Image 1 (tube, one colour):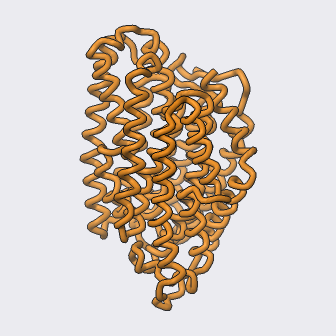
Image 2: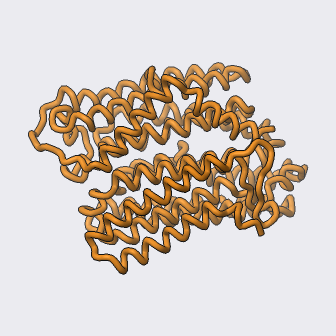
Image 3: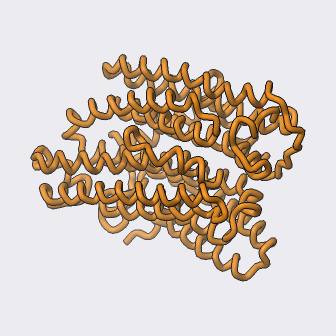
Length: 474
């Protein structure tokens, strides 16, 4: 057992346990500040440590081939940790006012992070299932942490029911695959021709349906709008950032490592689902007045954009997906940092709540605008470079129609994103000044600077994604 390979997961798990002790020992007020600060400090150190773990040829294993640590998994773990750092930064005041059990809140965040990291390194279906359930069960609880809010409780119940159904479908599919191949390890499944049997194809289809539920791919998206709206804003941000990135990490590993011989089946299917997500997500987002609900439908469309790169099924497509997943994290941080402050102090996250925000909180208004423009793919933000990479990769392999759908839907998304900007800059303010904590301001400003700098100079991030993709696809 090479415990060095799982040093990241061990560190995060120890942090989760230590946070529980801090909550028990320290006074309530000091506990809240200390837990958030200590969490950010440890995760920042871990993020920097992972930069030194990139390697060109060597990969590390834990428990044989069941747990695989390569550049691909390291890249995604850095994304998960970065998204968690930002979420903790802008959640301090939100947690203070709206969450009753503060110590458990931060510990559950860390357990969800462990699940995400396990998903990035899983090399068999059992390990992937453990990571997926650790992440989703933590989110079931986190979504319902606003115990006094009926919408939060309702969202948690809906998420639990739909998530449990998707888990059952996935497990049933895994049992089919094991039945026809005799293995749950991705490399061994890949070499087994029995996958072409009807039972094998049915199992692969059910596994993909389970992943589509986690990614809120249409028509398996029904949980996303209610959960995004009812959950606390920091939890919604993590569902949009970390959870979606984790789903992408395991989906690509399964498709490219376990099911490549079935590419003639899943590539056209994935292209169709990608187009449906881009069209449906953007169209349904147009009439939304609650911004969190609008971002839920937007996240469905964003999943469609990222699946465009998966359809390319080559190193250029994977680089594009990794690049877009990274910039999507920064864009969401800015949007949800602003929303958490607004919802915390105004009790709502609809267009009326942000009306005239440019006069009461100009920094938040600017951050929200830049983040939304990046999601729409407007230059010079990072979203433009990301969508350019995605659409170029799929055109190179002959899916011109899919790139055209993505381009048209990106233009349509500008409309409902600008509706929020219109409310912030042209709407009438209620005169209520918003208090912006230093941690919220820091998270918002860093995310906006990263979004703009990546858009202007994408080379550094592109080099990192190239390293991760080339190690995985070689």
